[in-house]
Image (tube, rainbow, N blue to C red):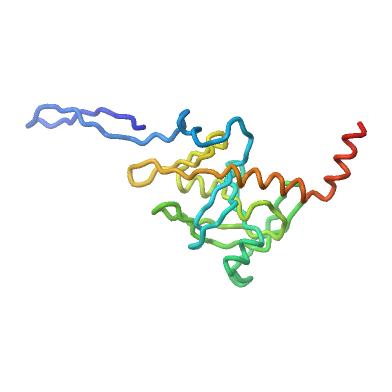
Length: 194
């Protein structure tokens, strides 16, 4: 979708002519839901190319102020402790626990022909995801993302490009989270007794 803006050229030697400039509009329509399972409440989980590797189970989190990398991805990318720079601020996990980061590392994320470098905070904690991309990446790429439509859209070379979420991967993550919870059985039996 594009919006046309009219402007007139002010040139005394030529008659005035209207010039049309196209601006990209990033948004969603009913067509964007076509290949999604509706209704749903899935997280937006995508595959991104990080440091030259296709990385699955990356959570797109609009509310998070920093990009996060978990141990499995850190190992798979063959990163070493000497690759990290200091990062001293503690973080709060999904469970509400304080997590001390191991450090941070700047890595490229490639989408189509666009490359954005971001600082990942490396944490040694369990996660369903291999990484979380957040506001710094979303803003640098000038994206609009939607969990409802399961897409990330961004402008690139005069076009609107998109990254499509993987609902199956998001749903598998929910099952893994329930099975991983240490007190899942005790809370389920407590609910039955109420």
